[in-house]
Length: 369
Ligand code: AMP
Image (tube, rainbow, N blue to C red; front, side, top):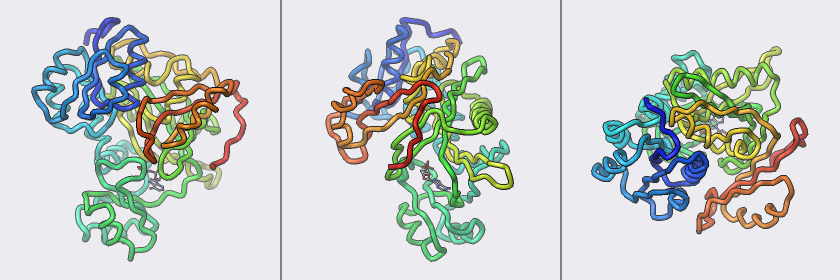
């Protein structure tokens, strides 16, 4: 592909905060962003050069959009397959269809990882209540029933503690196509944000530790305190996934770190996000090149930037009315705040984030709140 240089145009499907931060990063590189989404309130559109408000099924609008930009990317993984097909008929879509199809279906995703010999929780496909009974028998309890598609922040999931819970769990997820996963008694949750360029080069940010509250990411600790061998292994797994998916762009890989067993610790991959990731927001303020700039560089065929960390960091999401603390946070030295311009601070809504910076190696220990 020819490189999309300064003055070039990037189309982004989705109008949320990830699109907004991508648009700002693209503007810093002299590129222009056009947002496409059906929503009236689109935080990304406020900072973009162009905005099309239309449904993802609107073929005429999609065609006009694709033909007005040099490359299309997306900020969420649930892009309908038909939308991606229409867009790719008219131009370049990055990451490509394999990554999208793999990451938007948990069964396809886990089967792909298994085929690569990458460890996951044990899982089984569930297409009916009878399947679920068989799966509970083979995987055992406790286990987690997850919808194959459209789950996020713990939505579309039900825990099964005893076999008698299975029918209720299935009803709870709306009897949707699902997978049953064995419950992993992890020690910590970590993630790796990795970029892969058009030429196959990869660059991973340091693995980070993620702490959740009410199933939503609360804080990211950068870096995760891990033995070097484990940190290297986490980065290698993420880079391998990107390579096998022929990925171009930035991707988040969520993993569980299992407790030490006989001097060995294991990593298990939980989920692949084919986009910039909430656990990579700290890179905006603590790295030479942020995940947003990195994604723009990758999809535009530029050399990847240096993912090196110049500071340690704790990123805290501002969820719902937590955003009201902006004034206090703004007065703190060494804290950088990012607010997404959303009007309504509904419970559970990501309104912004704050990143507190520390000199390398000087981050104080953090305990869950
Ligand atoms: P997910 O939507 O798959 O990212 O899951 C949301 C959260 O649920 C994860 O961040 C974990 O805290 C928890 N979780 C998901 N799958 C499992 C599992 N197999 N075992 C234990 N906890 C899990």
